[in-house]
Length: 481
Image (cartoon, rainbow, N blue to C red; front, side):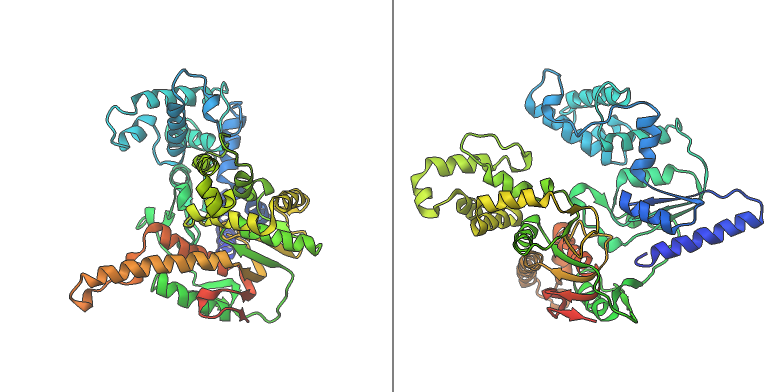
């Protein structure tokens, strides 16, 4: 299903409740949303007899509250007191998180699925130990843990939630395996999965297309008309998606009688491009909304700004930059050639869009401006719509709608880069195929990451009602209904 799904789910709930009432049957309904804000919005739209929540909040009430669990941040290696190597503790955290998101109910089944023999036996023992400590409130647990704990309790019939007449789950096209398993285990007369299979953009977080995993287990109904996007813009998006995502893609827009401009979004691929916009808006005293915390948005540029030789990088994702700082510090040739550590890092990691953008930002504005903009960002609205303008990444824009959308250059650049990679592979592949009728297409040559880049562009461009600017890959730069 695609746009119009909320309206459809509400109408289904009304029909079911009316049927139950006329036949003296008790009706209970539940709508499971992607995040808290969507659940709160849904609670205002759905009839009062349908309970709206996230999967996490449902699991929280049944586990953390009921068993008095100790909730805390995701554990770090040093939090684990066992006398084992730092590397083993990192492995422990990695496999715990992978298990939490998986379809497996037992640690043994998860470890067996990895097919690594006895190599992980000691990690399996540690996993069992700390999961027991978390489940008894002796060790802090994360949100991912109590969701898995809820899954395990349901699977073993220890928890028996109230029987539902109707159970609907939104964003089913981009969910993780544990959520699907919970959805399967919850009791309901009618279960409805709603979402868009073309918005599966969180593959790096182990998300899956729920419709594909539940294929042939129910009736599939496609809603091809979007009530979010104007007809002219929708036709351009449909042409793009047919060519690069799915030739059967259908996306019919809406004809608006009146056109407003009460909300404007600037959508990027990474946060550095948004920080550049923050600096521009701060200089003009223009307020803005953010969809993520400044701490998260400034993570990469602040990590690079704080780089010092022989100083630990706290963010494990960018630990490799420690070596770069030492190399630059100890090599006079590198210092003469590049001048600054930022320029050296940018050239060395030119394929990493986040690092390249962060270094470009630092060199353009200078460190002091980045720090002052970070402080100013804390004063702007986060997770709210207080102001006309919203700054967001394509990932964070999912589920949102704005009258006007500006696509920022880095989002176009990421797609251009992907096209070049895929076109080169397609060319080389077709050189080896003598029969022209068997030649491969661009879609045939895309890997999962490259496909997600296409899907991300679809998500970003389909956030607007009336005006879309700088969407270079939709055949026209500026599209106005």
